[in-house]
Length: 300
Image 1: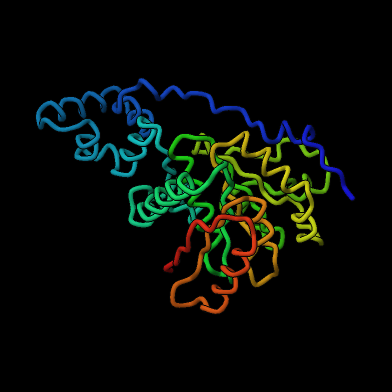
Image 2: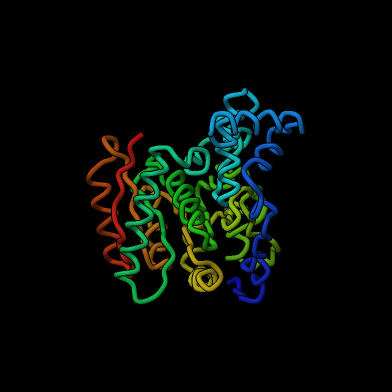
């Protein structure tokens, strides 16, 4: 049996705090000028149009055709330290709607769920918990939901970790466009793999722990004491820990993981999921120490 050594993952679970960028005290004009690569003459034209019309710099730049609405929005997001993906990033990671379209209806729904979730857990728990995102069936949107929930939690400013504990069909590394050579499976197997926790580009307080090599014994790995110890250690390093899990149809992995996390949020696909599967999953979770934080019906 592999031995778990907490000291072997200290480097992994202690990512450096993001350095403060140079955007903090800059005007929106200087940020737009940099993003759009405006010349001094173009900036002066915008300023003159701004004075004549009595409008904002960004509005003047758009009116003159020297900046797009998307570029102005990106500049505003930088000025207010709000994660907002560039056009190139949106094409590469289309599932991250809370990062790609932070002012859209889907992102607003995630923020509403974030508020309900944090208030409910603060009211009900006696200690801090990680949140296991579970679902009855494959295709319910669990991975999509976990990724975007993690982004919205990170947007609050606290350090947030997304753990891909779906040791059967891992996908978070694909969602975020990150490497998957090393990760959770190696830690639980007792291997020392430095820098397994990876910062997410564009979201200064968000980190990802991918699965790494897909193991032949996923249930046994999460049932070992090492996983419980790891969760406790991560909660001392991060303000929020979101854990993606295998679908309930693949076995009892998700219930075991939820028990180790301390809290579970159930995702079901509206008009497509089976009521019996959802009821069985909720019943299984009721037999664990995990707090059931709620059930979300995913519409897509």
